[in-house]
Length: 608
Image (cartoon, rainbow, N blue to C red; front, side, top):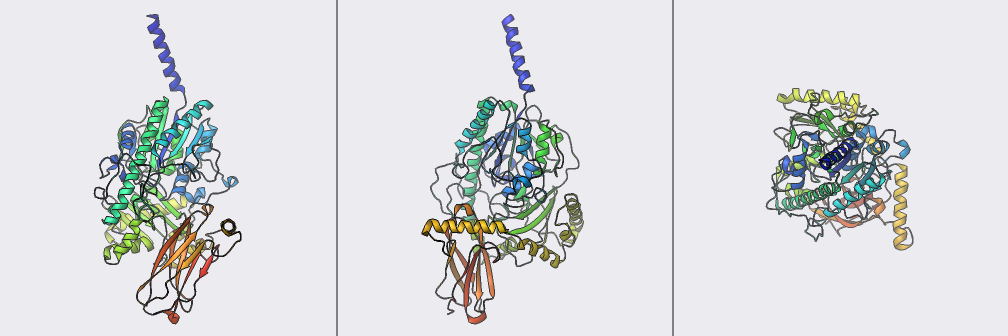
């Protein structure tokens, strides 16, 4: 009897100790994964995400959750600052200096609260400056095989054991690298290549679903098969992490937050603000609080709300100053009737091109404002070089519907509105439809109120959105400061470093060269080959390739993205009539002649 009582008392002490301990926080993100690629979120492909589905069965999942931004670094900085990009100043892929950060982020607040902080992958993209003082960085980001699913379980184990050794609860951000490109077994031209990191299931082009915003085509299906196989590999990584957490004994004392940073890296998803660009599979498992397998169909949730919510969940003081607000009450089963819409924004892409956009979305409608759109300016982005995009451009030559889609993809329009409850793929712009004028007006008013509240610098441009001159004035100001003096110096140093390593002297042409055709024919096409040799520390850069007439006037300019060493083919339509009866080709690294580290122009090419 005494032994039984002693065992019961010991069990009580263990339970009491567990209840009094601070809960751990485990954040798992996937990279470039659309919400509807997850089984429980209605994926039309069977068995894509068994581990994510298992986690959903243990969690409260939100059906109307959205990220704020459609590209990585600004999206993640919103999550962990609780501020919109125009307020945390991470509008693209440029960090700010540590002394310029005048607001707290997740890592600061968790360390101050006594947590052991760790991260793997997307390290420099998750904080406003780098290196950030995490207690542990799990893996070398440049050489770490983050596409290996088993490695994610090992990383979780290492992080948990390091926190235990430090005698602290853990806060771990495990940012799974899939399904970000390169996809499983896909080469840079869409070809299938060997890949040692084989997912637990590989999908075929014939079985994958084609999103409604893309054409159903064999080339598109092939790329989607690589994408969905990468989703499955991401799911394998989730399974490894969850198994590691279970084995550690910390499972029941760990809050899990799971989501994707934005949609799939294909046209009309990533780098945009459409429905599928930002909808995210947000699941939160709060042991003893959230109801396993529950689904929230009522509230609109934004990732700007994550940090204040986490602080409330962990009973940590909120310092205020957040743009977002806690939805912890919803996790506890309460209601927040004010959560009827979310706001989204985009400012610049990884190459530094400014294409500002703002959006407001309810359950039924989304309104998008794109002041950069003037009918001729072309938006570049991470999805332009995909096999899918290249194939859409091929199909557009003989298909008017796809040609219209490509035109919208390239140029957009200043205002768009879509009824997402019926048209989630954003195929029919309702902005000029009289029957939807009231809905659009209501969203425009909500947008203006939000811009006033958050001190959005685009407020006055939005108020004069119907004036093309006002929009263009904004764009001229933004384009005039796309590359700072410090960035030009850094780029020039990178050029000299690369050239010196190769030849011993800094020579022109170290970054790019053009190979042009021997002659061109009016009315036909001409292809130039852009060879690029970019050092690793220069990263990805836009390159402008221009077709000029014999009088040096610009006929057409195209922007491509380049990274490392390679060759890119750029094709132009040669006009039937040519200024000066000659053509020349030019190229520059960056966005304009003012800030380029290198530019070149070819000799005249004969016209035959």
